[in-house]
Image (cartoon, rainbow, N blue to C red; front, top):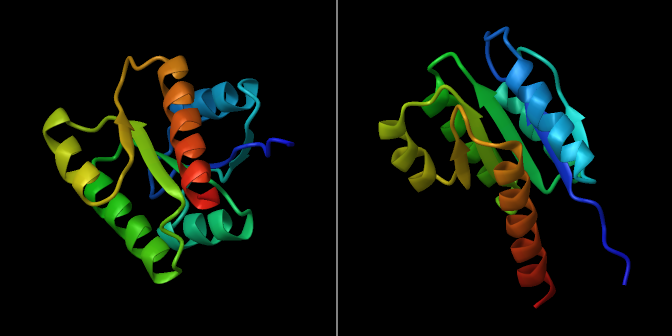
Length: 139
């Protein structure tokens, strides 16, 4: 059985112009054998979700430093629901206060990786989640 590569959209929503973290995680995911589509800076939630659906992505990783994480996570998850695409895993990182993480997870984010998280932690988590998702889809 051929194992299909994991496809991940890495996005920077909003007006935040710093994308070093997004590029670091995109590279780590690529180095781990995943297919990564980096959308670039200043993407709207609509653009991010449209790209994920068009690319048949397994996951969307968003990097947020602007403090607008509640809005962007909720809007992206809402759009995925509207498009009946909640099978796309949403995760994120950036500067997100620890106190805000439970609310993001409750709205449907799979994981939030804060400053100092190793790329290996992110890669291993995503591989595990996609494997779990694919196993459930095959059952």
